[in-house]
Image (cartoon, rainbow, N blue to C red; front, side, top):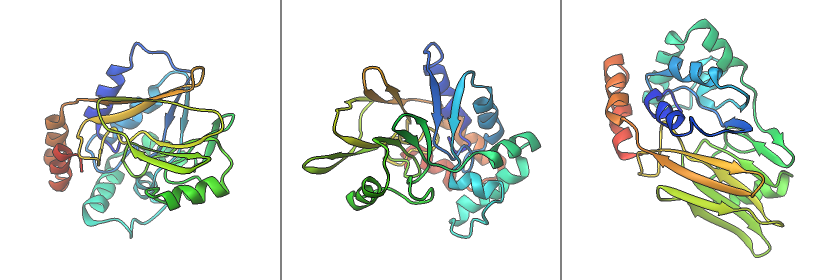
Length: 239
């Protein structure tokens, strides 16, 4: 969500009449956006089972890491967020667990890679390392902000970027999957709409969805807060 309350609120509205066994949050609740408290409060208020792992921006905001590897706008946003999170929300962010965690049999979640929470998974080689060294059949991961899939099968590893308003994938026995829902608050696949996915364990189907939201409101929050303007500009482009 990256502190983008307007995007997160739009997704919550989209699913408000749906029933879920669990909600999976893949990290980076905060950073970049100007609504961090609203985002954290909304996650805390979700009823039922919620599985959360921390992201790299969460770690820098709560000062578990110093952010020395961040670019200037990202670090400025992290410092701004540190100063504005309430004590209770800061405590929640600081206590989010490190991934990977197992949320169901052979289903794991993580922020970057199940081998290293800060690793970006972009390539077939990245996926090969995970499939070779991690046992889960299905892993949901974030960090890259790109809705995508890596599928291990007998012929090798298939890679695909997920595009369009919706996309449905039927999971097949004998294959293993690394699936990225994209980002709700900070898309980077040149589609500015919020991106998320649902997983039906009964039918073994995964469905990616895109949701329009009031980008102009999110941008106004960023500009009025004094955060770097580039953080507002990029939301229009989805980069």
